[in-house]
Image 1 (tube, rainbow, N blue to C red):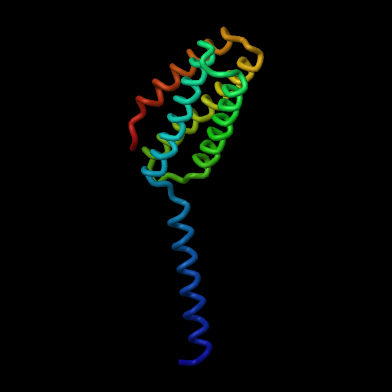
Image 2 (cartoon, rainbow, N blue to C red):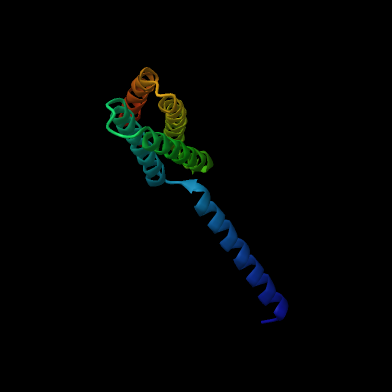
Length: 145
C-alpha cells in the first residue's frame, strides 16, 4: 500500500474517532441527570438541616454560614454541569430544565439563608426554610425520563 493511501486511511480513522468521541461525550444520559438531581436534593437537605439546627441554637453561626456558603457553591457547580448537558430526548430535556431550575432556586435560598444567619435573623431563616421546603417537595415529585 502506498504512503498516500496509508495517510488517507489514518486521517479518516482519526476523523471518525474524533467524531465518535464528541458525539458520545456531549450526550447526557438519564443516569447523569439523575445523579445531578440527587446532588441538588442532597444539598437542599443539608440547607434545611443546618437552618433548622441554627434556629434551635444547635450549631454555631460560623459553622452554619460556612456550610450554607458551601451549599451555594456546590449548587452552582451542579447548575453549571446541568446547563452543559445535551439530553437525547425531549423528556430528558424537560427533566434537565426542571432540575436546573431547582438547583438555581436552592442556590438563591442558600445565599439568602446565609445572609440571614450572618445577620442572626431567625425569622429570615424561617422564611427561607419555608421556601426550601416547598422547592424540595417539588423536586421530590419529579419523575425521571
